[in-house]
Each structure stands twice: as structure tokens, then as C-alpha cells.
Amino acid sequence: MADSLELLVEHWVRPEIRALSAYHVADATGLIKLDAMENPYSWPDELRDEWAALLRDIDVNRYPDPLASGLVPHLRESMAIPDDMGVMLGNGSDEIIQIIAMTLAGPNRALLSVEPGFVMYKMIAGFCGMKYVGVPLRAEDFSLDLPALLQAMDETQPAVVFLAYPNNPTGNLFDRDALLQVIEAAPGLVVIDEAYAPFTDASFMTELGRYDNLVVMRTVSKMGLAGLRLGLLAGPRQWLDEFDKVRLPYNINVLTQASAEFALRHQSVFDGQTETIRAERGRLAAALVDMAGLTVFPSEANFVLVRVPAGRAGELFEGLKAAGVLVKKLDGGHPLLADTLRLTVGTPEENAALLAALSRLL
Image (cartoon, rainbow, N blue to C red; front, side, top):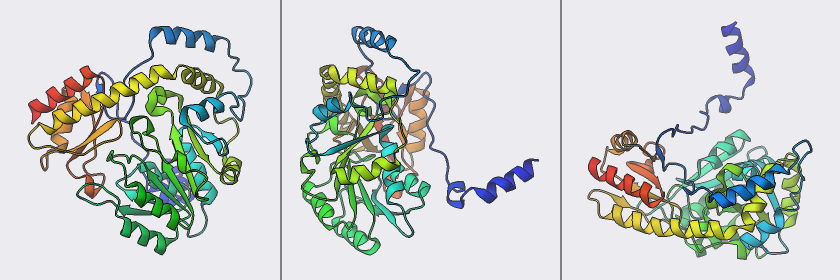
């Protein structure tokens, strides 16, 4: 039975899927969780009470509004989306990436991004049968290697280019003029992924409409609503109308719609949390710079990438975990990330615990 089942699965599952490993989420039970770029602040009690009262009156026996018509205007206002641009919602940014790839996939078509970058670009390209093209960033500072990127686009003619701004996992903003050159030279669609927009003042939202091949992706996860799984794509309606054909109906459930709309009516609370995180990012980075043996990379996101003494990333990761702090070990994930750890910015108390533990280990 077991052998025959294995043969059956092996026969029918695509080889490229069998070769993958499922996305791993570390168990953070009992640990200070600084591994996933989450907002560390929960909702104030008075906000929770008002939210709970709202949810009590929601009926879940009916399908949700497929267009989330009550939520979209709040998102437009919150994210300053131009009035003449379309908006499509997804069950997190991951679903939007998948929708775009499914829509644009075809024989010998490529999805291009930079490396190191967001791992889901490469994974979803594989899911959808697209060729993935990863262009290395500059080793010294993770900046965009514009000549190499332009050459890769010219040679592979990608259907879509994904660029995170700021970049994950490096935290830096790419040069704006360089990105404009990429948009102008790209043969297909360019997606600027602004997942970390709350933690920087830079955005390409104002460029929408100037370029026929530009769309911007956002999420509410980093502002403190990661559990709702809500992302959005903004751009010319001609693109979004095609993507909407691939979007599964009712992909944004009633509880997410109501909760996100409620949260955006109280955005000042989340804006205050964001400002605190930005200030803590500066204090955390400054303290890390003072530690001997660390290279600290500038960040415009809610995390800080550090390079630790050679060969010690695994030891320090395990030592922090033993001390009750979970961070992300990137060493081994890409050659340019050798000896690196990614540290999410937590509360002042969480950051102090991280710094104390790291100092002892170093």
C-alpha cells in the first residue's frame, strides 16, 4: 500500500513541486518573537471591546461582498491610491503574487526579481510553471546592480518583474532613479512591492498612471493586522481587470473585511505604533553598531539585518533561542546572506532582551 501510494504521488505530482520544501514557520511558543517582521503591539482594550461588539453583529451564514465595497474606500484613503487607479484585494500579498503569476504564466515565460529578495517570488514562479530569474544585488551594500538587471531583462524578456521597496530581507531602499529605469526598460509588468511602506517615507504610488506597466502592491500586515491576511494591488484598471478573472470569488472573508474597515477607522492608533517602531529601529540599530564584530545594514523596514562574526550565525541563533528570543537565521539561504541574522524590531522591552542576550553571546 505504502509503496503503491508513493509511486502514485510520484507519477502525478509535478517534479518541480516534489523538489520543493513547504514554507517553514518556526514554533515561537514561549519565546520573544522577533523573526517575522510583525508589529509587536496588540490592540488597546477599549479598541478590542468595540471590535468585539462589531463582530457580534456580523452574519457568517452569507458569502462576503466579493468586491469588499465597504473596505476599499478606506484603503484608498489610507494608502493614498490615485482615484483613477483600480484596486484588487488578496488574501495577503502572497495571493496577489500568485494571481499575477498565474495570469502571466506561459511557455518559456519568466518572472524576474533580485536576490536576496522575498522568497515567495521564486516559490510562486515555480508553482505556476514560470522560469525564475534572480539577479544578485551588490555584495557590499545590497544595492541594485542596474547594469546586470537591465542585461538580464534584455536577455530573458520577463513577463513580470517583482521588486520590494524596501527590500526584504535586506531592509534597504533601492535607488529611485534606477527603479524608474527598470520600469521604462521592462518588456512586461513591473510590480513594486511596498509591504514595508509604514516604515519609510518613500513610495511609487504617486507614479501610478505615468507608466503603462507599473502596479504597486501593499499589505496591512506590517501596520499591525498580519492576522487578517489582507493585501492589495493598485494600478491601471486594464491590468487589474485581467487579474480579477483569476482571483477566486469571495477571497476576502466577512470578518477580515469588517475588521480591516474598523481598524482603518482608527488608523491613528496604528500610526502611533508605527512611529514607536521606527524610533525603536533607530535605537536598536545604534546599539547593535556599538557591539564588536557586527556589521549593521541600514534599514527602512521594521527589521535590521546584521552580519555576525564568520561561522557564528548558527551558534548565535541557537544561543538567542535558548535565551528566549527567536530571530531569523538567514545564513545558508543565499551566498550574499552568509553569517547574517534578521532581527525584527520589537517593543523596547523585547529589544532590550535581545540586545542583552546578544551581548552576552558575543
